[in-house]
Length: 299
Image 1 (cartoon, one colour):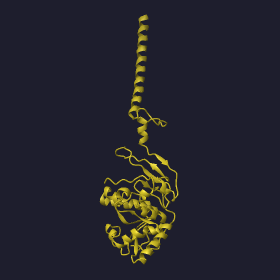
Image 2 (cartoon, helix red, strand yellow):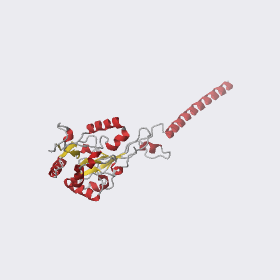
Image 3 (cartoon, one colour):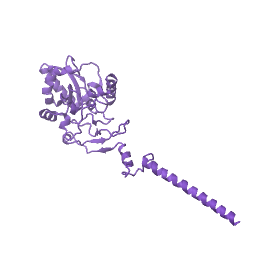
Image 4 (cartoon, one colour):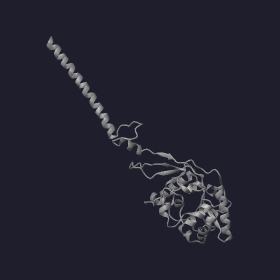
């Protein structure tokens, strides 16, 4: 009888030890998975001695709104944008910050490869400037913002008086239109080549309603390198600033603007700003203090 009781007690003790051992393995596995990053870290964790939470936070886009500015103050800093850290989906590494413009209606707004417009932005004061274009159709690319359109009319009138009549080639483009344009160039020349002369949707000045490509009234060399050698291009380089426009992508500044030389691409920034930029011999990127520099495309 005593031996049976002893045997039963021994069996119960052995079973208890097996259950305890099984629970210990489960706990160890959970800790190991967390350390390896295979389980979800607590939402409230911001730092970790193992680096797990820090790495997780790096992979998430961060948006930090900055104080907005008006057109007169934008040149003093990068206020008026919010930074968005992007992650390369292939490598998982953080790429250059993209700044989303908080004041897209500012006439001095900086839009380039690192500064983008909100996807939903559309200028509210688009009009058709009373100037000739190289096409007859009533298309959206005739339109410009009201202030820029009025200035363009004066610029065209002055060029005509100097016997160098001009014509518009392409002004405003919607976000969707720019997406179509960019994708078409990528299909035609490849992404690396397209990035040298075409902007991704949201990054195009044409979407601001403040930019326009121009040519001589004959349309010869429209949006082509040969336009730079024309009398019209030389006249624009000398007089565009008097009407608030700059040659947005000047020769020799490709490493700063991110785009090749485009003597036909005019950007309205206002007379005072345009004259200051020309006098200093700088680009809009250089004029806007503390702006994130646009490095020369690798491709």
